[in-house]
Structure formats: structure tokens, C-alpha cells
Image 1 (cartoon, one colour):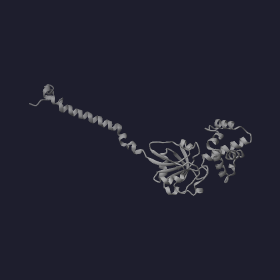
Image 2 (image 1 turned 90 degrees about the horizontal axis):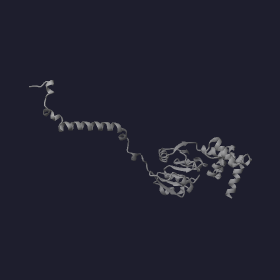
Image 3 (image 1 turned 60 degrees about the horizontal axis):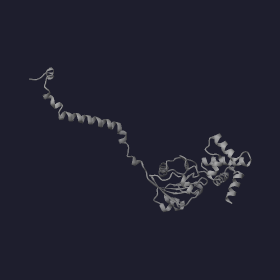
Length: 265
């Protein structure tokens, strides 16, 4: 006899035990586990869609020529770079298998740079690539004290894929400027320092007063004479003399010329 719906309510528990037995419990468990997996994957699908973290790390071997002072300014050791410090850029050819080369010694160009076929960064604030007849793999940077620590570097030269990867590896943004002496920032700072020497020579004010006035009035991190001390008056004078050849506005102040001459003697 077929039971109707009202009659099914009175069916004994023994006849419906299969709903609560191992089969029913197993089916319910699978359903719950499937639900949890779907929710988990939906929540963390972004993580699983990303490449492994280690895949983003690019290791480089970089050869660098730097003075002790420049080396202290440099970022230093890190897990993604093997730094090879050498005496000068003339020894770069001994490490031709390196990924890049950096010469911070200052305004020196070696013909062997063209044989490296890798990016070569040179600290050349005064000299230009055209004047040095430098090959395409050479890029000028400003290695004056204080400038290497900046997050954005002014550079002159051709930025190919290898050079772009190098700057990215160094965590430096770049501004490509014309291949001219002093880039932009160094030229402006050199002119400010020069004007300060003119003012001191004319007895307008003292060095300390000019430094304080400049920092308070323009919110500069340093005053002109503090900049000159950090950069080196000889470096400032060399840039001004180079700029003066094309523009008489950059005529070096007599006091600056005198100071550098006395220090050299």
C-alpha cells in the first residue's frame, strides 16, 4: 500500500534511519567542505593569481669604483645585489661578466667602457658625453656628495632596456636631461653658492648669516656655504669655469677662486 503525505508523518524512525546514517552524514560533510573551499578560493583568488614573490627579485652583479666617502653614501649591501668594489673604472674590464658598472670617482672616462657592452654610470657633473666621445652604453650621473641619496637622479645619455632595469634595481627614479655641464640641479646650486661668495666678498653679510637667511627664507636644507663645504669648493669652481665658457653669468666669484687656489697650494 502506497503511503500518502499525511501518512508518511507516521512512518517509524527505523524506516528513515538511512537519512541520518553514514551515507547521509558523509554527503552532508562533502557539501560543507565544498562550500568552504569555494568561499576560500573566492576570497584568496588574488593571491593565487600572482606570481611567486621570489619571481620578482632580480639579482645583479654590479662593479663600482668609489672613494670611501662615496661608498658610505651608497645604499650598501642587499640581498639582491652582489657589489664588487674596485679601485677605479680602468679595472672594470676584469669583471666583464657583471651586469652593470658604476664609476663615482669623477669626470674620468676610460676607452675600455665601450668594450663592456653593459650600462656604465659615470659621475660626470662637469664633463659631457659628447666632449668625452663616450659610447652609447655610458650614462652621466651626478655623484656630488648628497646627490646620490636623492630618490630621483638627473641623468644624461641613452636609456635602453638594460639601463632602465638597472635604475629600477637601484630603486631610483630618473629624469633624463640634456647632455650639458651641471645637469639642472648642480648648475642652480653652483650659481647660488657663487652669488653667496660674491656677497661675502662685498661684505654684505657673513657666511653664517647667509646660510641662516637662505634656509629660513627659501626652506632649503642647506645654506650656500654649507653646500659648498659638502660638495667641495673645487668641484663648484670647476663647474662654474666650464659654464663660464658659454655664459658670462657664471663668472666665478673672486673669493671662491682665491679660496680654492689657497687650498691647492
